[in-house]
Image 1 (cartoon, rainbow, N blue to C red):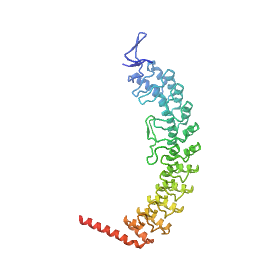
Image 2 (cartoon, one colour):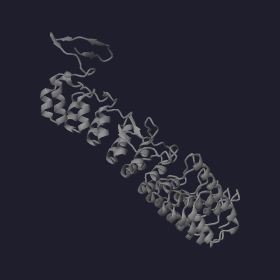
Image 3 (cartoon, helix red, strand yellow):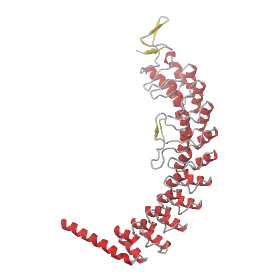
Image 4 (cartoon, rainbow, N blue to C red):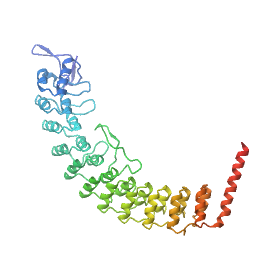
Length: 433
């Protein structure tokens, strides 16, 4: 038994008598599983218009399958233009939603069937959902994007998560669609938040980068994060602020430098991105490249006049960061560009202190050679030299290196005392067992 729905009326169960005959009521509100309905859907799925014309009856026009899809949904999803046109000519309703809340227009746009989208729009399909333009951006369907814009779609429309179509285009690297959106006047400096999944679109997008700023990124930040160099150029040419910052004061160049994204960084530097800009921690892009060991980025930044001795909030230089992380090639590069081996941070520690603490012999030797052993006996705020630190961490090889390069012999009593204490402690432990 089927449920009928009269325009403006209530639903009734049963059958309706018409001209002396008993005919089933509309099946639009309830899925139908009888063989005839299955044949109709099969005909649409195959794209067989002659077969559909033979089997379709007026009261089957809006019949639904188990997923609450109508024939128009199925035809739109498959891009069968002749069937879409035929169903529209018969009066198929364009606003019907399936079990996931999608209309036929939604399905056509989701699958990238521009011809079906055009027919549905001409047939009166509603453009009140912004997700259609977002789909075009995700799939880089520039022709579909043009069509939607011509039909009245707004470049500033946002999905339920607050993202514009341009945000999607930039995140996915959809260069052609981004061009269309920018030509149509899309805002280039609106802040956005990248999301891992958009349930309305049903399409997975790149996950947000939790290590960097998830909020308040402009499309230019996202282009840097995804290393879309061509899109960086497009956005800047369209008026994007190259020095735009996130809530943590990170510029697009900070993000590209942290990730080691050379293509994006190259474009940003070409467009005169501020190479010594400081983020919330007063770190420059060079600090971030040095921390992560991105030599290519470090070279690019130094060539663009990045300060090798810039200090962050803790007064650490990029050389401190490279020594602490054990990036030998970055240390070599920074020293060649006049990075100061004797620079002290807020705790009075030099890069030599950090190299010693980490037990990195190669970096230690490099720093000693660069400074001609001048800073070998520098003390931090705790009055400790590199030799103290080497002893405390048990780096015997480094102790030999430091002594052979002129570390003060007067420290030997202190070093000897440390070893005596360690030996006594070891003996006590053995006695306990």
